Image (cartoon, rainbow, N blue to C red; front, top):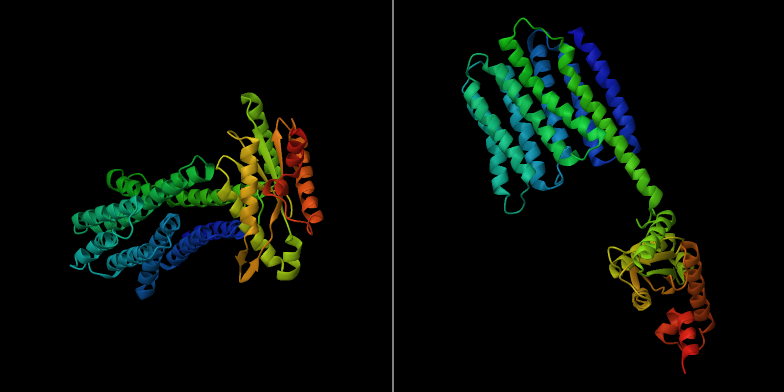
Length: 441
């Protein structure tokens, strides 16, 4: 038993536990694959505890340790692929795992100079190329072709060097270099933004890949140098730290998002709404433009909750948010500012007439029944409109003006329930209709 590997086993085990603890708080498919990769790294070090054992146990431990290191790299690459769930990509991963594992088995078990190394090396680059060409009509992506090119280059190198003196060691290092250089490319594609975790992880994978080039060079040209074996394992720990930082950065980003958005609908919440309204008024003040604020309150929402259940009520709120987003511009803001209350900020170019048109359109859309999980739900809404700077000159007073008009609309609707239905403008904007009446000759 090689006891010198025991500190590495313990260190990687601690890092894996730390990684699992961080990943558990915001578990995703990517963090799950990363955790599988680190468990394979732990298997790699554990297997090499027994690689000096005589007989089949030593050879199997060597094979398992080498294979686990390759499997971990392929899993890390797969986690970064944006088209990970496509059937052709799953087939690609299976091909890479199978072809690399077969070649490693040949290096461990086949006699030196065996003819089997030729088909084994051809499979490493040939099978990915065939799969990529076969599926190119249905799907293609630059990252896939980068990976295929990398493995075709690896095949060419293996064919050229595997029968040379010391070719087995060169072939083994080439496979590891190809896998972990591929990891650095895939992580650069996914995490090239300037974050600490992304930069550390990419640099760690580049250093990890360079180990399989620098070590043979030192051995060949500087035989008097004998770096400590732990030096070659440092990039692994750098990558682990980088991945943990990436997970923490994602969790911080997600927490910031939740602090400013409604969890149910994904719309901005009251806090973000207030910030955007203040910014909109500041821009309007500089440019001399108008800003319209619409407050929308769903009618009969409590009745929906009481009769159909809160689950249907939640679905109704989500559907209402989607309806609002389809009716406004991307530069406008739709926020959920209360239980069944939504606020809409219409920025320039806008006018009172534009705001009224939007309000009427929303009323008409919400008057149509919604089919929600087998329930037909019909609600309607009351809308209040206030325009800056005509109705108010601050965010607080603008909200108060819109809120009053919205409740005036709701009360007018209740009071006129048994009277002939008013016209659409009177229904939605009673305060505006009254002012226009008073100004008429």
